[in-house]
Image (cartoon, helix red, strand yellow):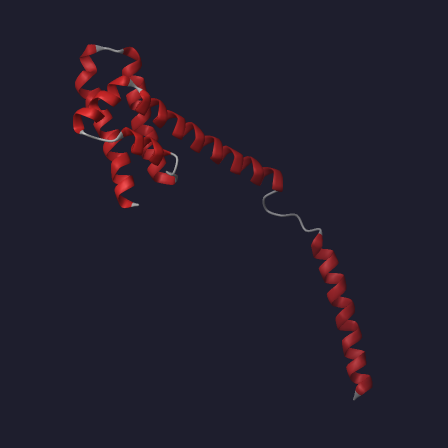
Length: 131
């Protein structure tokens, strides 16, 4: 019985060692450099989204609307740094619209700019309230 066990164990050990070293060099589906690039792109996108929201919140027009509504921009600005994912994307889209509309300073878009500013502020306040 002992010799049968030895005869079975030895070939199994050889197969296990051979198979682990053979599969150790296996190519991954995603290379580490691709993974690093994807992560870096995601971080860069979040940073640019946060910068757009901070830029919109720093505008005097946005600050005037926020103060007329009685909103605390300090809290909203701090909340932007904690946002991520879909919430940050929504706020960034609204902020980019505000920034684009206010750069031209056209008087014909005052109502829509004010509406966009209010939407931006409401999105940020709702996100703060949910957390």
